Image (tube, helix red, strand yellow):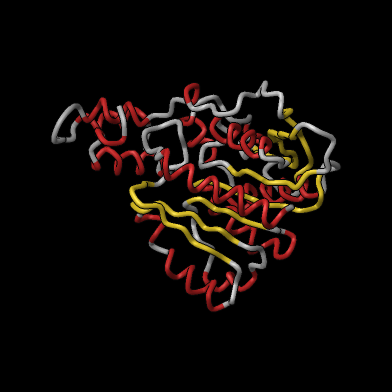
Length: 293
């Protein structure tokens, strides 16, 4: 089943399911009660659930990279320790670095694959698992969503900030740091840009919450801000963010991708828009190479 066959009502319910405490059972039950023009709303809902095994673009055994899990200190975070998925390109380095920040459900296989995609392009990539202090990503997004919601958000952000600092100072790092993230992770990239100032060298948030307007003046990193066209919850703050960046004479570009919904870069569900995801990703890689190399 492709995006063309999924009723907008089901998409809207899926977005609610992803960003609230709605359980999978409730999502499927509510979907089955929807009246759609053609087909089964329940089948449409089931098709939207992630299929990670089919979404892998770069294998963890790819000879162009080396992937491993690392643990490191995280003072002031959820537990004082963090774990992440570190992927280095082939070669001795040093390499420019990119932090990859997950959605609101922990370090799932899609995010690990994004880290591998960056390493193939020559970046030392780290994807931290915000759920590590609570036992780590549980192997499914439903439990992961509940676990992440239970964490103290300030301590979780501290864990991400410590992850950025760990990566920037890594022995294989050139000292240049970029950050990208998706949904929750996109919001974290925006906040990192505020908090880190010149210590962040480039940020590419995908459909993430904008920072407070009064904090935008603190951003010093070049920013490429990616939006889905049909994403009212996130896009509600887009224009205020743009105006604040312009008022502060910041180095930024915003892209809104036609025909897309929230999550269009995630190729594990039919929300994925192959053409626009490739366009957004090519722009992301070019932006990092321009600012980090």
